[in-house]
Amino acid sequence: MSSVIECDKLCFRYPNTAKTAPPALEQVKLTVERGELLAIIGHTGSGKSTLVQQLNALLKPTQGTVFVDGKNIWENKKTVREARFLVGLCFQYPEYQLFEETVEKDIAFGPKNMGLEADEIKRRVCRAAELVGLDKLLLKKSPFDLSGGEKRRAAIAGVMAMEPQVIVFDEPTAGLDPRGKEHILQMLLRCRAETKRTILLISHNMEDVARLADRVLVMHQGKAAMHGTVEQIFARAEELTEMGLTVPCVTRIFLALRRMGLAVPPGIFTLEQGLRELLRLAAESGCAL
Amino acid sequence: MPSPLIEFQNVSFTYGGEEGEPVPAVRELSFAVPRGEFVAVLGHNGSGKSTAAKLCNGLLLPTEGKVLVDGLDTADEAQLFDIRRRVGIVFQNPDNQIIAAIIEDDVAFGPENLNVPPAEIRTRVDEALKAVGMFEHRLAEPHKLSGGQKQRVAIAGILAMRNDAIVFDEATAMLDPRGRREVMDAVLRLNREQGITVLFITHFMEEAVLADRVLVMDEGRLLLDGTPQAVFAQQNALRAAGLELPIPALFAQKLRAHFPALPEDILTEEDCARAIFRLFAQKGGNAQ
Image (cartoon, rainbow over all chains, first blue to last red; front, top):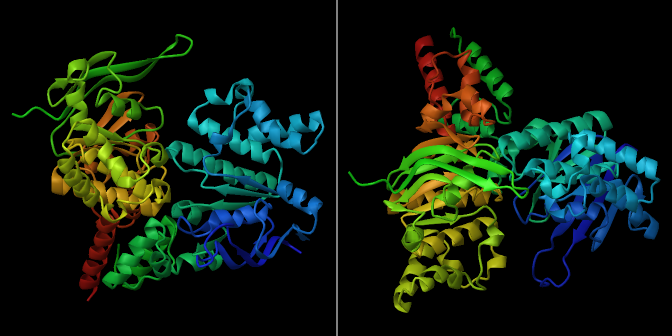
């Protein structure tokens, strides 16, 4: 079986919420293939964060099942513990969770809790620091002496050092400047290329989604509203807009062109596609450039 | 000629580092913001933007040079009260700025401290909340609001003091796209309809293109200063400062290699779509 995560009929209601209030998750069905990069989009309150917290047993479903690596994570205590190590969660603004004396100790915190040998912990800390692009010299420093972007990468290294099969990044570029954002995105790409891990990326930035993701899951009012390839999802730009979501800038430009009456297809989401499409149109209308 | 509302005269600011190591954050910065202008400030982290923001109303005082607000020197402690009545700041984190348990109490906090009579406070709070589209939430509890709503409440808190200018220090950085749009719409409206002077620090290029003028900071200095068209035409300087072009501009640039007739000054999606449409409409006309 090649899927690493399978959720079926997943329902979740936060305790102490009014019976009349809609559940946080409703009948969510989700399959994540091994090694893919799945983007999860949806506006604030759509259930994105609640969903990913189901995947490593931080929240227990009210109904339905979660299978990670072929096992029902709620089967027994052992499977629950395993799920926490199989799926690593990197929350929003993870740098707020740095707490140790040194960057090295902070990154080592997770592997230590897994009960690994000292040598193995050391290897993992080095590997994680390398993957996120943190200079070795920074490892001995206090995490609080790092710059904003470095802190973020140190915190991400802490999750990577646990070497989970699936890593969930919740808005990893939020609040960073363009350079800091690019660093994080490059890091995601490198992590993916070198470790072949499965990555779930929660993002509001549709340009990043268009650039990085294989497939996209759209959450809306606690439900999995759409699930498909990037092309399939952004071809439904009008529906996404109705849900209050944005689409990539180029997609919006092409939507405007369609409204003006230009014969361009939907589902254009990168600059390259846009250029290709306009060249095709120019050739078709039979005029020299 | 009226004096500018905010004026930096050769301002430098150096933080005293923990180990006595001085850290220069702003160097020889000079610019003037006339009343009613909407100025966006760009620059990567550590370029001195936030320090400049705090220098605007005397939260920080220049190590060298002068900051004048409506002609008042921020270094003159006797004037600080009047200076802060003119210039307010909205910070990045929506959760750190609201102190009262009910929205309207929070907005009333400023005018209360200015000893404004109660009836007048009521009027000001209502007006301020209406101006940012938060009037119907006036009795809500802050923790029930979204990030964009909280930032708009923070703006209302400044409006209720009848300030002339608002400095936004990455006030949209922690918001989702919807929240960013809400805040940006409110800021544009305040600038256009009420003539509020705006200094808008941001990492989002698509927000900067909406300003009258863009300042780019790098290493504590002013690198570029001009209209969005003029500033975004300086692609190499921007790239060196760790910034990028707005996506419509980037797309137009890519297209221009094949469609040389496309104009140079495309910054927004609307510009871009209209220019492409014109290109094809004309071509279609020629082909017939």
